[in-house]
Image (spheres, rainbow, N blue to C red):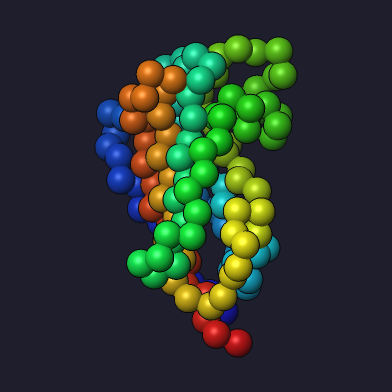
Length: 137
């Protein structure tokens, strides 16, 4: 069985305050089928162009670095409507695709996921570290 934890690298005055992180399923059993869900509160509106940088490491090895368009991700999961061109303040749920879509190869070990949210003008909104230890079968 895997163990995991998360930490908010930001502060209470950040434009996006992370309330919680979930892994689905919990407890995670396989890195290929693990989905990360971040629940946050947006303190001010964001214009289109905001983005998420996601980096996944296995130990010290960087496996992937990927950027997601924040507005498109929120439209895809139904948090904001498809016709909106900004993100209003309030609660947000950021659900990432299962890690298998980001990783070509998965194996047991300690995965560290860093998620940085940025405004369109590159201002850092929030930063979250998630660590998942998948044990060898």
